[in-house]
Amino acid sequence: MSKSLFSPKPYEELISYRWSQVLYLATVDFCRRFMDPRDRTVDQMIQAARSGKQNIVEGVMAPGASSATEIKLTGVALASLAELK
Image (cartoon, rainbow, N blue to C red; front, top):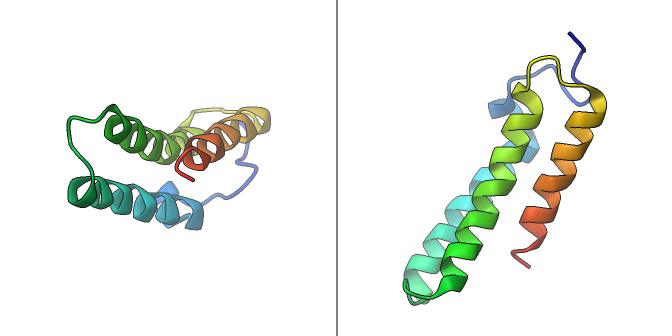
């Protein structure tokens, strides 16, 4: 089993996870307040925020994940969150 490249901490303690959680909750709140719930954009925004958060979790939690896998999942998380710009 390989050691985590980024941190031996549980994912809940990672700053990147905490910020992705804040971004997810803010995205959901924004969509509920200001957008038409029937609009496909709402689903896309919420899914992008959820995906970013989830990929951070998967990168940390994958048993025996290599550093390359962690980097890949972190990149996917970054790309998902960048869709919200």
